[in-house]
Length: 226
Image (cartoon, rainbow, N blue to C red; front, side):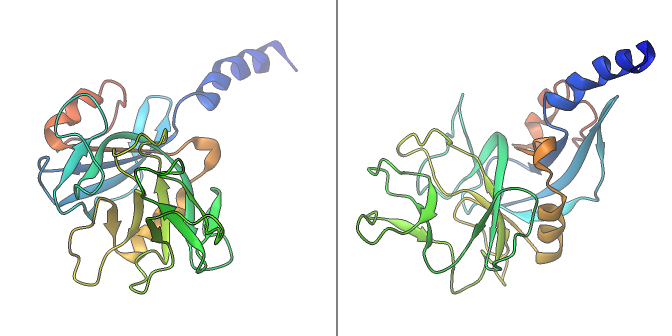
């Protein structure tokens, strides 16, 4: 390899290996808003560049709750979608064939997400073990089919009891009513989002009220707040 190519490789390698190169930004009008707008960004040499038009999304029935730092904090059963910065770690769906390059959960009748705050498996997804079932869990193959396709938002990845569980991107309800704490949208933008995810680009979600957006522009140069 020539010296010139070696230098280029050394310069570009950190950019490739560190930080998220795919950023989903959801902004709401305020902490109590039950809807917002989503824009997808990709990282370039000069910062983040929008690669999608704004998409309407539906948030929790109580608005947003912070993952840490200040109130209102997100808690189990509060009806708030988490506010903060989160990895997007997997997708799921009712088709046995994966819908994304991310790790995929096939949502058959046995796939569940555990929301029992007293269970050591709290806020984890897996297949139901009839010999050791949790006392409370969410069925991932639902009659209303809003989980027909979706993605896992890695909120409360440490499974801190009572801080919230089972947070996803998923389909809107037919009447677009607020969610129990997830971020929902229509099917076309959801499928486009899921297919766009690249595990090598470490996709993340930044979900915040508009009043906080400018604080994140230093870390994520190029994101828009208006």
